[in-house]
Structure formats: structure tokens, C-alpha cells
Image (cartoon, rainbow, N blue to C red; front, side, top):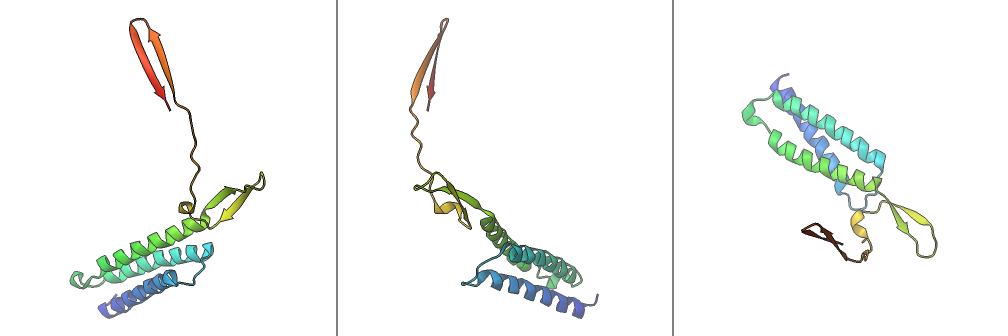
Length: 136
């Protein structure tokens, strides 16, 4: 592959990465699991294309480090979105004995109740040795 073609292909890969970043950063965006999975696949293909194109160019004109930084940040964001979409949390409804399935809830949005467990002391005397256990 000649340098001009490699530069064009690398530019296309950078543009594809930018489109994925813009997709994530939309403020009014509601995400769908399939869309996020598709974006992750596209991101992998974009990385492969960029890597091939960048490898065909001289090392001093390499932009791999900058691309990888954006790539890994974007991949982490997409994986977090997908994970949050996959969370199924069961929340107890006070008015009934039924658990409600709540989707798309981040685990940081609720607190678990405190459980009060009494502490007790156990003293076991074995021969000349005295063992004391504290349970709580």
C-alpha cells in the first residue's frame, strides 16, 4: 500500500472513531443494547483499519498513540453503557410482597439497608488454654 492510500485510509478510520465518539456524547441520546454492540464491533474494525494504514506509513508520521488513547477511552465508555443497560436490579416494593424488576438503573442509585447483627462473646476453656472469640 502506498503512502497516499495509507494516509487516506488512516483519515477514514479517524473519522469513524470521531463519529462513534459523537454518538456517545449526544445529550438527548437513549441507548439501545444492539446499537452499543454494533458500535463496539465498528470500533474494533476501525482500530484494525487504522493499525494497517498506520503501519504502512513511516514511523515518524505515526499517529497510533493518539488514536489508541481515544480508542480505549471510547471502548470503555461503550462497555460501561452496555453494562448499565444490562443491569437488572430487583427493588422491593413496600406496598406488596413482590419484587419489581427495574431496568437501566445504575447500582449507585440506591443504598442497601443496614443489617443489625448482635455481637456476642464466646469463651472456650480448653485445658490450660483460654480462647476468646468475638463474633460480629
